[in-house]
Amino acid sequence: MTAETSQYQVRLAQGEADLMAAQRLRYRVFIEELGGDGPHVDHRGRFERDEFDDINDHLVLVDVTRGTGALDHVVGAYRLLRGSRAEAFGRFYCDAEYDLAPLRRSGRRLLELGRSCVDAGHRGGAGMFLLWNALADYVLENGIEIMFGVASFHGTDVAALRRPLSWLHHHHLAPPELRVRSRRFESMDLMPGAEIDRRQAMVEMPALMKAYLRLGGFVGDGAFVDHTFNTTDVCLLMDTQAMSARHRDFYTRKYEAKV
Image 1: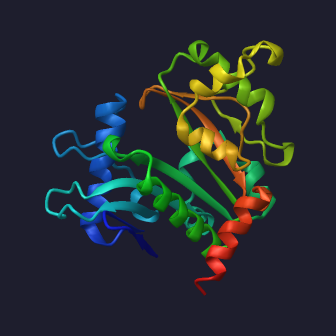
Image 2: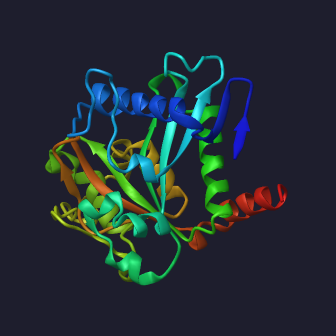
């Protein structure tokens, strides 16, 4: 799987250099920029890693103008864990934060998305477009039916996030049969729906979260405060069959044209 422009290439990580560069990018974003930490963080080498790295596919956005020696060639990354691999390993990453029993009971093909990040100098524009399209290709090629993963607000003050969390609760709650629930439950029903300023709620919501909502995504029940990473998390879910016809048809035509 590859896609490219004159500056970027998107591919599944090829070898140790790509993986280490993705972990270095994660360190820059999650540790240096957002103030997180964790038991497996290598501060001396500046790598953010954990025990799930070896069982995931790593979708990486590569700046082809940079060599691999400095491990700064990966400027965007997604970690992708298919249900079959998680079953063999024993768990998904999200199992630590959410009860995923509804997803497992569904019997549908699952894909967990994690550690999504883009270098500050490459956010928006062609790089993100390539990364998203490569993710769509991966979903189609592997017959994925439900994508999910934690998406994060910066900070751990739930009250300060009352507008966007309440908007998610009132307008984007997952259907009961797919409604995972936070294991350390923090209610997102913090304001009456009629009192929420939609525009302000959108301003306070991370761009990636808004992008998933535009594609028909929804959220699990309750937030999870992750003090280690200095974030307030929600579980985002996407039923790929319920994506808007416009986006589904676009990606389907794109895929069929390749095979």
